[in-house]
Amino acid sequence: MRYWWVNQNQTYRHEVTGGYLWSPKRNANGARNPFYESMREVAPCDLIGHEVAPLTLAAAKVKPVSADDLDTWERKIEQQVADDVSIPETDRLAIVRARKGQGLFKERVAKIESKCRITGVENLVHLVASHCKPWRDATNEERLNGENGLLLTPSIDHLFDRGFIGFENNGALIISPVAHRPSLERMGIETTNAVNVGVFTSGQKQFLDFHRNSVLLQSIGS
Image 1 (spheres, rainbow, N blue to C red):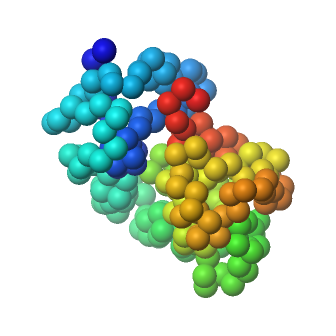
Image 2 (tube, rainbow, N blue to C red):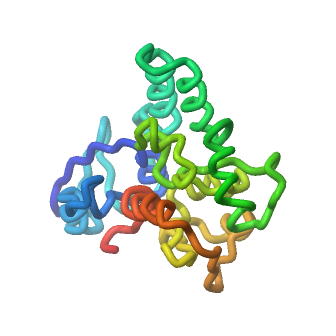
């Protein structure tokens, strides 16, 4: 048995409640992530310390001990944007609204996308503009870049934003190995057969690359 210490951030809620660890394979600059390489050495029954209490990989039910989840993190960033007087007020409003897939960002995405890639819903009232490179990780320019978005129904947006699904550049749907497939089926995701959602622009492919490397949830040893 070996001992490890984990500083969890945006995916702590998925990891702790699901009993697994996650790390992007590469950093934002494209370099190999040393934390991912270290994580691959973790074995069942190793003792992992995080925040307050230790847990083992066999512990499938552990209560989260950190308040720094995705929603809290994004609200903090949103407040920073709202308070930044160096950004024109109209731009601040557009950036804040983009967090929820609305406003100017949605208008720009709608010039590229016409319907939900998964469900086929076309009515914009029922769609949100989902960021490929998450709002929380993007620059203000990227937060409003239409090619950083897909039009998705709210449930599919949730799965995409949290890394349970992703897309290859050729349009192939990727399902995370840690996703609960029965739930995905109920939400409209085909899990037994290959699914292709169509072509992407060159700009979308760049942002989807970030999503695959830094958002899509992977299992240990993958």
